[in-house]
Length: 476
Image (cartoon, rainbow, N blue to C red; front, top):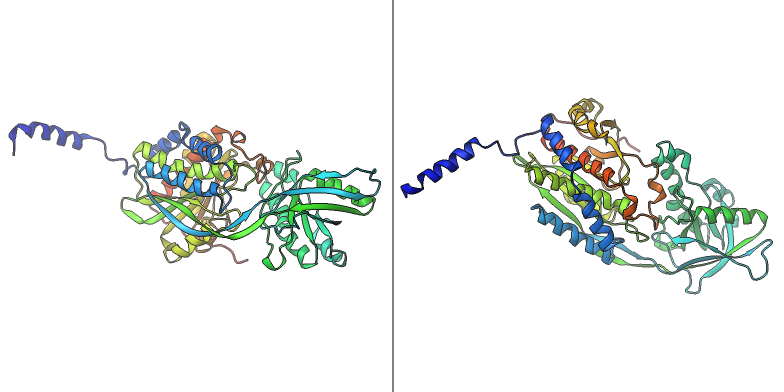
């Protein structure tokens, strides 16, 4: 050995011995959680990634070039952070929007030469009219019971389900239930109308903004009866209802979407490996696809970007979790959940090793805390996490038997506890699935709070000592 180098080696050894322990060691002490929270609140990483996704790519419907570009963009960003990236193959639906127009051509009291344009948009999975469209009488119904009672009138008609989104519920913190009630008509209405012989189906848009915005979304239409289906704006649905009360109403409808063969796509998986329990997994996620009317900022670029930012926060702090933190950008949540089902199929035998799964998919409104499908007895274990998030107004902990969120529902049924930010969604459905879901509608400070909640929760779950138990989803 060259003795001249001994002083240098001695200095290096002394420095290593005297340096603070590597950041893997802070565990779940309050100081570590506070640093995670504060680092998230001082970072614009999530905003920058969301801007990349929405402004540079735009819409990302499954099977589209935009969806493929988003896979590449997110994977590259995660590799840049040093994460272990896997692209998990999945076959996804490939539905393409075409021409979509509607016009009221006959109604009682119509002046000669007058027709009225209806603002509408095709629903996912819609069938097509002939290229030149179809013209048929309109039957307006207010419920599934009314559709059934008037079943003999349906054949050869365009059925309009005129059911309003309950904005009063949304304004009072019940936007989710309000959406669930109204979206049932979008999902099942076209199929039921088709079974009764309707030539097309329309639904009143499922959303809160009365600014003549159409809200798209998926349907349960089947190949053997894939009739044209569209959402009309709330204003146009009300107009059609009023005109139908005056007398017979007819409409000319042109919808030319295409249902193409399934396309190849991917879930993007980025792992931050655990130090001493790398086989145990904590998922933090959002869904990568969006509908095609806008750039999907709230739904769900914000969720994906926040999940990506969890890894960025931990890298900035040089924190290494005991368990593996797995960022997943799910593909095809909007019209099939193929990505989630593919992941579950691959990991079913490994479900016990999934300690918890987080997804943000309720928009980028202000988070007030956390929702969790943990056993009731485990709620008290999260007091330190609540305390860490309280300074940013996000200390609420809301336990539920099941969250039933789209991408995590299968894992939850397999016993994996699910977590989601508890979000103010009172204005979410003003933008959701509409042309207005763009970057400018997202508050950067609320987005930072999302990252803080998701990063602190991911770290907490990845390092907690006590077992939190398994989800126990009630039988339906």
